[in-house]
Image (cartoon, rainbow, N blue to C red; front, side, top):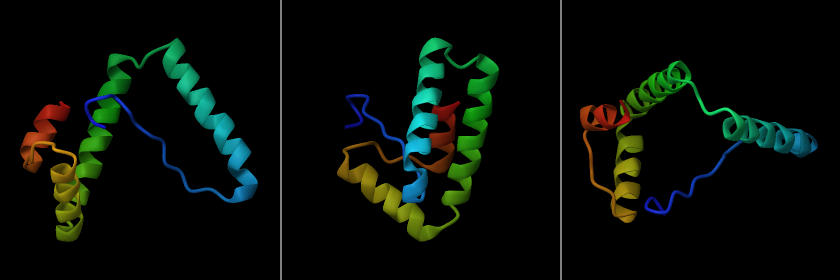
Length: 88
């Protein structure tokens, strides 16, 4: 669904904390709606994402799974430098 703007939130939580997690996610999404990220905040998130992506690409199996998902979803296959440039 990359062309429709659908996204998701993933979290691991004990069943006892599920309602608390739901409240936190709702609050964070509401904050983004009320006050979008500042340029500094967006830059920090991009930097963190690039770091996580770089670490993930060190694993050959994780890289192959990611490429398979891209193929399955009809996305262009990118090298790590290409992906980083698009994120920036």
